[in-house]
Image 1 (cartoon, rainbow, N blue to C red):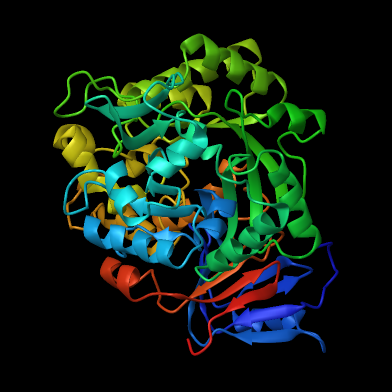
Image 2: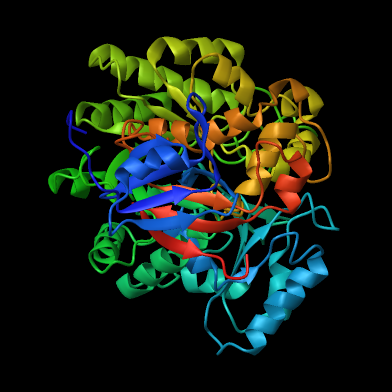
Amino acid sequence: MPAGQCFHADRIVHNGVIWCGLAEGVVEALAIWQGKILATGTRQDMEAYRGERTELLDLQGQFATPGLNDAHLHLISVGLTLNWVDATPQAAPTLASLLAAIKQQAESTPPGTWIRARGYDQTKLDTGRHPLRAELDAVAPNHPVMVVRACGHVSIFNSEAFRLAGVDETTAVPEGGLIEQASGALTGLVAENAQGLVRAAIPKASTDEMIDAIESGGNLLLSYGITSIMDAAVGQVAGFDEIKAYNLAKLNNRLPVRTWLVLLGDPKVSIVPQSYEAGLVSGVGDDMLKVGAVKIFLDGSAGGRTAWMSSPYLGNDNNTGVQILSDAELEAMVLDAHSKGYQLACHAIGDAAIDQLITAYEKALDAMPDADRRHRIEHCGFSTDAQHQRMVKAGIYPCPQQVFIYDFGDAYVSVLGEERALSSYPLKTWNELGLKPATGSDAPVCHPNPFPNIYSMLTRKTAKGTVMDARECVTIEEALQVYTEYGAFSQKLETVKGRLVPGQLADIAVFSRNMLTASPEDILNDTHCTLAIRGGEVVFERLNA
């Protein structure tokens, strides 16, 4: 604000416990002008900014933070899967209940229509294994069926799905993929790159369907206090048409959350060439919709035994996961995107994949130095101390999903053993090294509900209560910083949003409970978002809160 000039606020938010950021602490009130924070302080301090048209918003003692930033999810998929069969352990804890839900959907859906389900975890099913093709055939013989594991890296298909896709026992398996057989017959399980062979038979979502998904998924996120997100693989659902859908959604005021687009860069499906030709490089856009980084997949998921590890998974000395790309392929792709001016945000979970990615980033940065490119490692679940030191030196940042501890921690122990599993996703270590880790849900891999995510940061407990190395716990203030300021940092937007300070966007989440004083269990089980403000305007309000 220019010296000697006073603006009348558009809105004053007061009578709350307003946490502005880790360094800024708590205030009672703040003033908003033209979508940004004008001032913070006491209610009396804000009187200097009150005019005849200033609106007052009384928080009635509730707790407020900067709007949460889910730094890694898939918004279009979140919206689309709202209409799929819910295969999560909460909805389908047994194989029989999962099959019954698919059968019910088949009975109410015209034959030939695709039935899709998502969210199962074989380590949590009563059978302890993946569903089988024959079991899906039995409940839906006249429908193509796809059941996607929670991680998204493994799917189970039935015979009709394979028939429509032209996939059988003689089909060549693409590099970096798996089509499982037993006794010379397809089991139904397809993983990593091979999934595209079958999914190609599924009709692509239309532009209108994607816009609907952006809106419905975004409104769901607002209801949890999430005002900003990163879409982690734009192009994965419908190719370059997703860029069109996002821009039309924004144009028609149907984009509920600030969105940072990460462009799918995998071989044969990359939308980077079209995007670059159109001038869509990192940083292009505005505060609502901005081009972010390029995404390349290096491996799969730990729970699905496809994350690329340096040592084998338990029970199978021949399985170290899936290496999707050779070193030479990856290094060429990373250097190409880097030289075009893109930030990169590549998927690497296993320690071998992380090592391969760090090396590729180091070589690109050596060839074309950039002290603040902020290349990211998405997930970065099983990184080592030596890798952390290389990341610090090169300016490479982890972007994990701490909720994986809550949802999948016990699965990690079962497939990797305690020594490797318990120390995964080492949030406090990263924080102390200055690596500014963000967090996210990877929805629809996990539910976007932020409270299990925060709970896992505070306790390192899984849903079953297993403690995954308590030395990596952080404080509630640090957890909130991860969810706000560091989320903005991961997008090179820390001067724009992430804290409630003058000049930054007035994105605010209001909650029913003061998380600074609440127990982790109360945060997990008895806290909800009551109000979401984006750019100074109320965009979500929970009735009867």
